[in-house]
Length: 257
Image (cartoon, rainbow, N blue to C red; front, side):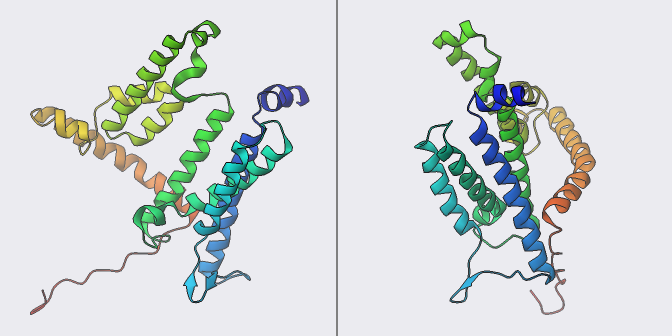
């Protein structure tokens, strides 16, 4: 165990990345526990306010992210300072991405359906960092041999091709596959080959005069969403809590617009 730790974590300088990932996940989990207790009216916790203004935890998160990020850039990967700043950065990133949906919508949507995006972004971020910690590098660079790495032209071509494949998957509406494809190019390749989502830029451009392709894309998207929407929502509810039910909309009555 000690040899593995030294060879795979210490020597490559991955300890700061591991500490950042651990503090990121731990901060997110603790934050969600606290806000769920506040929501339920349990425990000694409460919202932070200053002069009647609700201070969202994204505010200290930004401060910690800036301090940790600049500190890590100016530190040696193998030094004690890099480890400390990595923990600070991970804590800040956890607080910021926990309220990613608020930043995206510029509204307090924490306990709404839109707030699920925060949980999704946190899970994707943790997974990507975990892959990088396992040895994967962006755009398939980890798959190149030593001779290929010394050939700059080959590296540029490999990165460019993998980037185009990820971009193609993104244009087909496969955002998650495109993101993971940056780290594992095979994932993006699968997304690039398969049918596009019906509302994607690719479908609007290339399926416009292909009614069969449009119909197949809609049918596949319908079956995919029907199969995975439920499990995904239950997973998000388990991690982040169930959103508040949306208020029922009353139907227009006589004399009501």
